[in-house]
Length: 180
Image (cartoon, rainbow, N blue to C red; front, side, top):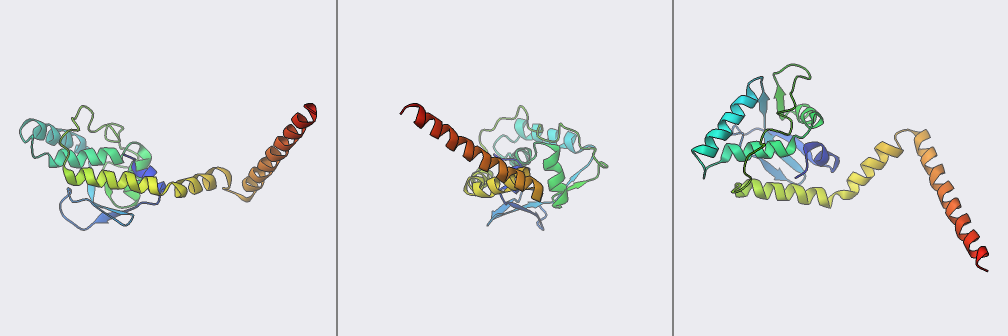
């Protein structure tokens, strides 16, 4: 599963859902709808307690665990948290830059991934397929960001490519004339 920032680079749009249930995630035509979720200082404690309760008591009805596993897949770094906050999915009630690393990507450590709800499994599969199908968008985005950010960087990149081609041609010509 890819994290939120990787999916966003591939062209996925995140949209806050109007549904009341946090368990209701929808993916349709490049848009992932996720209900709003509020981050407070005690959110991680409540999430871990709910996951533990479901793991121990409701082993065959693990809806909250599956939701937090999905959220854990989407959030790996602070960049993912910032992206979801900007998109209106996460609401930060913890203060600025106060999201601790355990929430970002480590919420479901030690949780068994067996018996995942079919809806969440299908959603993960659709997101992985979306990322694979939009590989050209990722390549274009990374080229633009890394090599063509400014006109000067673009000119230097093109000059380096031309220099590399000339060097390759010179090497081939030298090898040909050496073996004659």
